[in-house]
Figure (tube, rainbow, N blue to C red):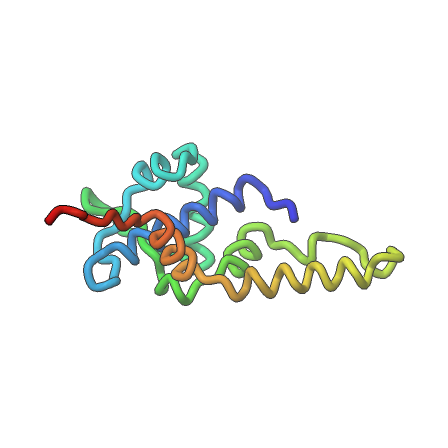
Length: 145
């Protein structure tokens, strides 16, 4: 599966906001996140990120707040946003653009597309953020007595 750089950056931006949401006290993101912070953490050019976040806002994935304390935050809980819906919104992709009727492997490619869509649609950003956090939180035993 090939996705555009724009889609990859959109996924990273939503993931970053989801991770901030999950890390906040009580699991509710209260403070908007500045574009510069997301761009730095995710290594996304800031000007490109501004355009991506505007599109994500139009599609109802993020909200913005103006002012000195402004920035972006998720419009919904991370568990209510799936990777598949963000990809479809950004890419407006329709089964990889293949013409399955004119291909002897068409039914196989259709099943592959359906399987990929199923995985993406069942994977929420909340799940991704929890998995990432658990993989990067290391327990170091203290053997002192």
